[in-house]
Amino acid sequence: MPDAEQNRHTQTFCMQYAGLAFVLILAVAAYSGSLGCSFHFDDYHSIVENPNIRSAGNIPRFFTSMNMGSGDAQGYGGYRPLVTASLALNYLASGLQPWSYHVFNIAVHLGVTAVIFYLTLFLAGQPGRGAYAATLAAGLFALHPAHTNAVTYIIARSALICTFFYLLSFYLYVRFRASGKRAWAAASLVSFAAALLSKELAVTLPLVVLLYELLVKRDRQGRSPVLLAVFFIAGTAYAAAKYAILVQSGRPEGVQVAASRIMAQPWVLADYLRLFVFPVNLNFYPDPPVPASFSDPAFILPMVFIAVCLALIAYLSRKDGLSAFCLAWFFVTLIPETFVNLREPMQEYRLYLPSAGLAIMVSAAAARLYGPAAARKVALAVAALLLFACFAGLTFDRNKAYADDVTLWSDAVGKSPRSGYAHAVLGGAFLDLDKNADAVRELTLAFSLNPNLPGLFKQYNNLALALEGIGDNQRAYELCMKSLALAPRDVKVLTNLGFLCLRLGKREEARLYFNRVLALEPDNEGVLGVVGQMGDVK
Image 1 (cartoon, rainbow, N blue to C red):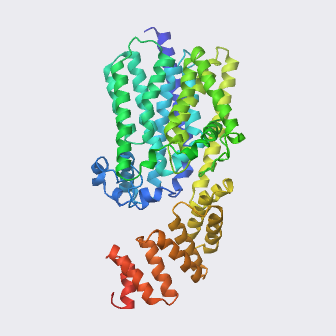
Image 2 (tube, rainbow, N blue to C red; image 1 turned 135 degrees about the vertical axis):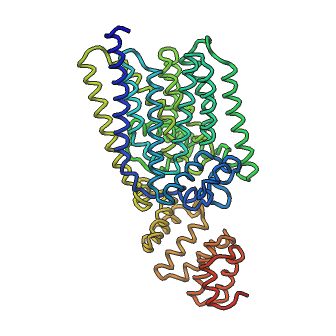
Image 3 (cartoon, rainbow, N blue to C red; image 1 turned 45 degrees about the vertical axis):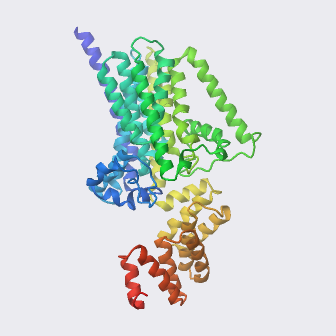
């Protein structure tokens, strides 16, 4: 190879890796503040209260048992063995100290960023512009403030791990299509399997592969109908097996389309796009509006916006296949978590995988402007640096909200003041800190906003405990009885009621509840000690 050409290749190589290294360093700095953040929300049943992760020897069982992902008695948490295995390794490293869990999440996020870099380089790597496009896509993704929810909320690593293997599988597939080497195809299928074992949204990958063939690749030469069929068969088989498992466990509603949510979905989809373009007013617990009718502007306006986007995809499919593909990617990858009957209609971590397509689309468009003129190159490079600095600062600042439960849920209720559940969780956070008056205020407000709060028995019990803390034992007793009626075998409810009865002088009633606790947990040391002081158990 002539020296000039060798020097050009060396320069291009250095520019590419310098751009990726710069982005990764910025991402580490942006998320450095997350290392001291606490566990939140579903972290508790998946990590803190999950005895299954406390032994690395359980890891093989995570792949054969359906109910190891949670400490919940009903096996809440689903079948995501790679995620549960990662939690077990974190527990081995740091127990219930959150720092190692955050280190893992940041590391996976960096891995996803690297895959996006190489994928963009391959899809939009025009001569002389590839490094810019790839660096811009990686930086947009790595530093985007809306991804804080996926990276800093520990159990949202299911989205991180799934996205890593999802993107890796797709990257390996496009390498196979370019080279015809079967090793790439085999590796792509293995990565697809890993994505499925991390989160259910991986079932959309066969559709993404098909869209790539139709919108980007277009030619049939080198296409493997067998490989496409394997993708679809594997995805369909996984979805069918998941549904069968949920039916067997008595939770088929988890995969049924909820008619009551259909009206809200256009707004949710439009707001995900808004979050990508304008990542402001970030909220751990969004409370999207539910339109009253099909004529409600909250339904019509986002529907018009989505219709415009779909028309744009159709238009671009004839003019710019890559942009059409990337925009279609956004909508396809949101299907499982938009229309499936999940507990929360909207969560920011669900934008993580869909935004990869948008980041590639934006970077490819910007790269077309990256012409030979030096002034234009400098202007575009400065614009990218300013965007990176802005996003990195916003991400660093957003991590402060995740410091503990009070800071996170105070932020949430400030942005979703009509969400009874957000107020209830904030009340629980105050209760854990023995701030009983604050807990009573938030939980009372929660019930006024939504008398049928999720986990109703727990909310009754929490308000009862808070009322006990401020000395209102009689009202606390009334709430305990409501909680007991909903959860007659819950140890926490029975224990709380027993101690409350002692304070009210109802010793025989207290003995009754303590005996019921011991029937469920014979080795409950706290209750055994109290019963011993009261006399023999009858």
